[in-house]
Image 1: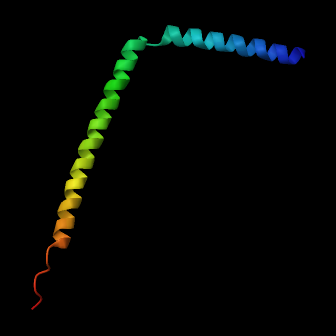
Image 2 (image 1 turned 90 degrees about the vertical axis):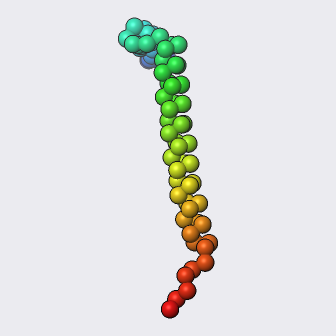
Image 3 (image 1 turned 30 degrees about the vertical axis):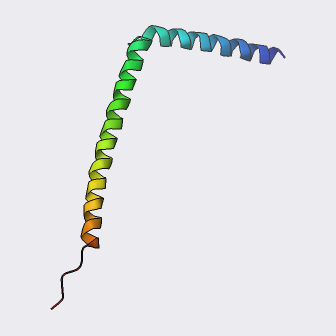
Length: 74
């Protein structure tokens, strides 16, 4: 039982020290960090949409070329 209590106390102290260091060493406030993350997510989403639209246009052009009648063979 003493081992379990020592473990729990150590875990609680470790969590407290870790949380304190995280707060003190974080370079941005929560609002700034959320804004940066949202900006990056929006940028990646836009890049993915652009890539998907480009690829879709390529595939539609290829499909159209496959649907067109083949030239006569001489």
